[in-house]
Each structure stands twice: as structure tokens, then as C-alpha cells.
Image (cartoon, rainbow, N blue to C red; front, top):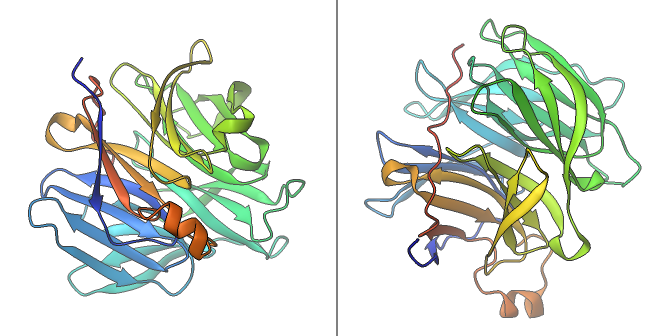
Amino acid sequence: MSSIKVQCVIKEKNQIGESPVWEEKDSTLLYVDIAGKRVSRWNSLTNQIDSIPTEKLVGSVVPRQSGGYVIAEGTRFAFVDWAKRSITTACPVDNQEKPNTRFNDGKVDPAGRFYAGTMGLAMKPDDTDGAIYSLLPDHSVVKQLDKVHLSNGLDWSLDHRTFYFVDSLAYTLEAFDYDIQTGGLSNRRLVYKTEKDEGLPDGMCIDTEGKLWLACFDGGRVLRIDPQTGKRLQTVKIPASKTTSCCFGGKDYSDLYVTSACVNMDADALAKEPQAGCTFKVTGLGVKGIPPYSYTG
């Protein structure tokens, strides 16, 4: 294995960088800044960044098969037309019972549904107002799971039979049996619980060996987890303590892109971490990821 290298590639700071997605055809990285209320595309060939502002806090963005993107923003799913630079509602989520919530992380499943979770705005440890929703290809929404503390990273096993999910304020990475036909979840079980020095589990992705890469907020690291054994296999330190999410990209999906945040950091903290809020590329890991799925609706 070649030596591991961590390089800051996107120097523009995000308040809360999240939801990175590699776009192979353009060699671009798609991502959001939640608190900065924007969706961005960074061209790795030209180093240019193009951004579109959102109305509300935007938790995640995914590619749409028919063109453009889909975002989970505020309490709605919405379509982004990049050429027209417009955002239109796909479907609002009925959360009248729990109004103080917003969408957070999301990802497209192997069948083309967009899964995204919510979280309470107060971020209280005993708050279980969060849920996981799926936007179906016909633009209808199904609630797949409720009583979630802070819905975060998610992905599916290579055989599409297991759904992996992070509940940050519970410090857990969990697994469910997954029904690809219906999108239903069952048989919930614990895969990994972060240790005190590892911080809050946040965004994640999967590699071609079926292992999970988990970003740790306030931990300044990405962990490689074996979901079959629940063991931590590897730790990659990132020079930004508020590490938020990760995805594979680049040539052959052999690079790991890692987003971070600088929100609520004072001048002293920023002086100690000048790259907080930047996006990093990790090379030399010796593993590859898989291309992202696109929303089919």
C-alpha cells in the first residue's frame, strides 16, 4: 500500500460542509454548506467553484438521473435546475407534529429513491423528533423510520440487502435489513458506537470491500469500520476537528473526499485549525469506492 496523503483541495471554507458526491462525467465534487445555505460544485480540473443559494438550511444534495439535482432543504425535497439556477419544491414533508426539525444528510438508494433524515433544531440529546424519509420516483414521500435523535450518514451494502445508518446524538452506527423492492427497514441492530475521543459519528460511505468510512465530528478523523464484525480497522486523521462527511471520487474512485465545518469556532480555535471548513482529498488508501446512485424521479 502506498503512503496515505491528506491534502486540502477546496480552500473555500464552509460553515458546515456536507453531503459530498463525486460526479464522474465532469470530474466535479458536489456538496452543500448547511448553515451557509448553498449547494456547490467544485471542478477538480479547473479548481473553480460554482454555487447556488438555498432558501433554508440545506442538509444534502444528490444527482438526478434526468438532469440537475435533488436537495433535502428545510422541511422539503426540492429539485435544482443548475442551468436555470432555480429551485422548485418536489414534495414538502408533513411535520406539523414536530415543527422544530429540518432535513440533514441524505443519499440515493440502489433503486433510485432519495433517502434523507431529519433532526431537531435544538439538538438535545434526549430529543427523538428526527425521522428518515424516502422520496420515491413518483415524487411521493414515505416515512421509513421515526424516533431518531439526529439522523446522519447512510449507505447500503454492496448486495443491497442491508441499510447502514448513523444517529449522531446516540453515537451509533446501525444496520437494518433492507427490502429493495419496498424500501422498508427491519431488524435494527448496532454495528459500532464511537468512543469518547472519536467524537460524534457523522457522514459515511462504503468501499468496494463492503467496509464503511465514517467521518467523526469533533474527532478530526475518518474511521474505517467492518460492519460484519463491528471492528474499527483504520483511522485517518484530518486537520479539521469538525470532520463531517466523506465520499470516494477521482480516477477509479480511489480518492476519499472529506468535508468539514468551522461553525461556532472562535478566533483562537480558527487560529489553531486554519483549514477548518475546508474540503480534503485522501490518497494512498489502497481501496476504492463505488459510483453514487442517481434519483430516478
